[in-house]
Length: 205
Image (tube, rainbow, N blue to C red; front, top):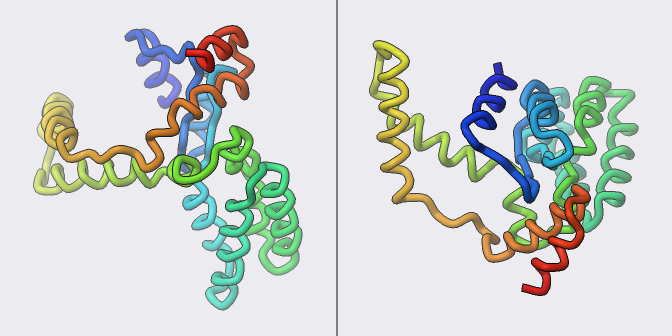
């Protein structure tokens, strides 16, 4: 179903010739569909907030604060190599008492440090490491739809979404760190091994 949705977007003209970064939650089906449809033109960043929450779901309350601090510190490491080293060490430490937490941490681990691989920093890196910006928009959609007790048909759903989108658009704020989005664009082209000459032209412009 997810693959069909993405394929439909492509059929309608959606394209990412300069590459893109998809920031997603822990949905395996979504990650697979994105890779199946867009292949090497896309980088994926798994939300570190969702990953932290998933890991802590398997940890006793008495240990959650300590584990949360180690996760936060790992995700704040400046490089992907340092972050992965810290995360793998934590997974090994969790293995004895919390094997399911260790398994959860290892699942998709590489995708939780994509912002480090892109060598992003500062506010933009913080913004793109999680799905918080999208969650905020989703929350506004839910607010607009909560008074509808029963949807009569699919067209009504689309009409409400369209109306809500127009309202929400006027209240959206810029993504924190948006001034560095050009840096992200260049980083993606390098990371995804896209046209090197285009990268040079972009730097020179």
